[in-house]
Structure formats: structure tokens, C-alpha cells
Image 1 (cartoon, rainbow, N blue to C red):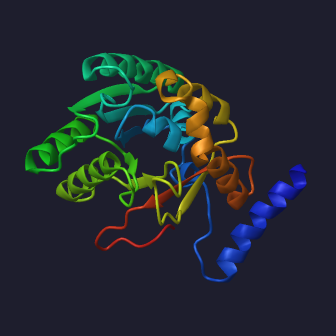
Image 2: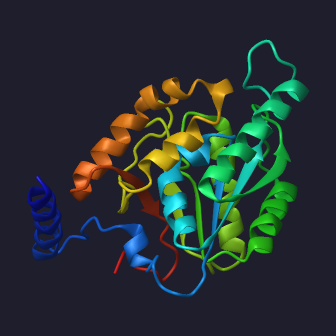
Length: 252
């Protein structure tokens, strides 16, 4: 079976090159995740559990290799627990996010917007730019903007505007969540092998007990990890779309 996996990976890579296509190669590999220089990775999600479920395996890979990882949560999930006030839900979900970040070896930052009532305006673009800029990132992840959840869209648009205002100084990649129900029209340019961090990601997701972790996985995430892994020829994967800026080409 191991030989089959590597043969499939080589087939995808070699076939893509022969056809003049960009092959699916691990994003972490392209960014030299194992190089000695410490990198700063930032992920922006709409709510606690979004970064963990969307790219927790990739964030764990970076952190495990000694790179600094920060997760910025746009909201604290105030509207996400039935029969709880916003204040009560925020307290619960903030702690769940902190616990998840401990598992991922990431630093949590809470931007302060309100779950279900997120805002896209000049003030918040400036604030997001400031939050991201304070981390001086080498790489940023956020939601794919074509998403049924308004908060996911707002998180993505705020990051895109921040990226434009710093003249695209950091690579920007989009992750997917609950494919088909929330993230739509997503066709990855990169896939990261998370076979070695899949269980670490699961433990982080399961910190969000108020959000029904089995339900998160049944909302396509288990299938997504399996399918993206199959595309790459490994056990489990996470897919990403790279934002292409002015004068930038595809993956090299």
C-alpha cells in the first residue's frame, strides 16, 4: 500500500508537469516548512472552531516545526450556543478556543466583532490590518470568500483588504470549511499533507464541545480530509487556494 501511495503522488506530479499543469504539491513543502528560519504564520477565522476545522492540521505542522502560529478569531461565537446569552456563550467559546490553541501550539487573538453581526467598513479594515501587521506574518490563511456564512465572508474580505493595503507583502491562502454547505466553488491550488497531524487537529476541534464536534466532522470535514489526501496521494490533506496579486503568477 505504501508503494501505491508514493506511485500515485509521483503520477499526479509527473502527469501535471507533462500536461503543463500546476501539480498538487504540499503548501508546506513549497514554503520549506522545515527550513531553519523561523516563520510567522497567521490564520484569521470567523468563529472559534473555524481555523481548527479548516486548516488545523496545517497550522499544527507549522507549529510542530518550530514556527510561530497566531490564530485571530473575528468573533468569540457569541450567538453560537442555544439558550445562552451572548456573554455566557462568549466566555465558553473563548475558553474552548484557548484550549484548542494549546493543542495546536498557537497563540489566540480575539478581534472583538459579534457573532452573526459582523461588520465590513473602513474602521474594521484598519483594525484587521493592524492586528495582522502586529504579527508581521510570512504567511496568512483565511476563509474562502464564496461562503454561505456571512461572518466567514466578512473575515475573508477584511483580510483581503488588509493584504491589498500592505501591498501584498505576505502570501495569502484561503481554506475551506463544511464544503458544499458553507464553502462553495472551491478548487485548491495547493494541498497540504496532514497525515501526521490529523489526530492533533481532531483533538483541537474536539475542544469546541459546545459546537458538537462530531457534527463538525459530519458536515463534510472527514470527507474533505480524505478526498484532499486522495488528490495528493496521502492519508489526509487540507486544500487551499492561493490569492494571486498583480504581477504574480501561479505556483512555482
